[in-house]
Amino acid sequence: MRIRTGFRFAEDSGPGGVFERKQAAEEIAKDLVKKLSEEKKKEEEVKKLRAKPKRRVVVPIALGVLVLVLAAYLIAFPPVTYRYPHPATVGMPKKWTPELEECVNALWRYRAAVERYRFKHEGKNPSSLQELLAAEPDLPKVCPVSNKPYIFEKTGDGGFRIEAPDPKALGVTALYLDSAVPAPKIEP
Image (cartoon, rainbow, N blue to C red; front, side, top):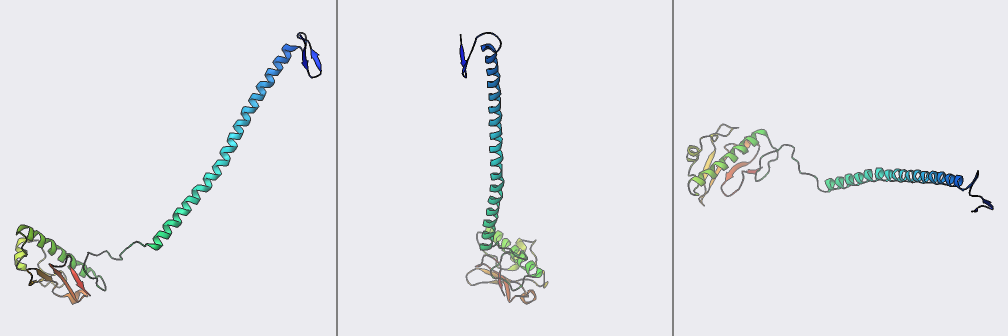
C-alpha cells in the first residue's frame, strides 16, 4: 500500500516506511499535547497573576472608603464624652467638683432608701429624716462635705424634700432631692 506524504509516495515497509512514520507522528503528538498542557498551565498562572493585583488594589480601596465613611460619621455625630464622669442629676453645675459628686451620690443613696421605705410601708413617704435613718441605718447621717445633717421637709402634696445643708460650699445655689423629681436637682 502506498501512502501519500507531501508529493511523494512511501512504501509500507523498509527504512522510512509507515511504521517509523507512525512512531514519529505519535512522538510529535505527545510533544504537542505536552506543550499544550504546559501552555494551559502558563495561561492559568498568568490569569492568577493578573487577578491578584486586582485583589491587592480592591482591598485597600475598600478599607480607605470605610475609613472615610467612619470619619464622616464621627464628624457628623461626635460621641458624647464627659471630661469627668458624674452621677445623673436634674440641672448641671457650672463646675463638677469631687465634693459635689460625693454629695450627689449621698442624695442618690437617700433616693434608693426612700424607695425601699415606700415599698415596705405601702407607698407612704417617711415623715422625718430620723424615721428614714431608723429604717436605713447605713445612710450617711450628715453631708460628707459640710458635716451638717441633711435638711428634711415635708411638702404639701404628701411628698418630701431632702436638701444639702450648705450648697454654697459645693459651688451651687441649691442641691436637693424632691419626691416629684426623679433625680437629685442642682440649681447652679
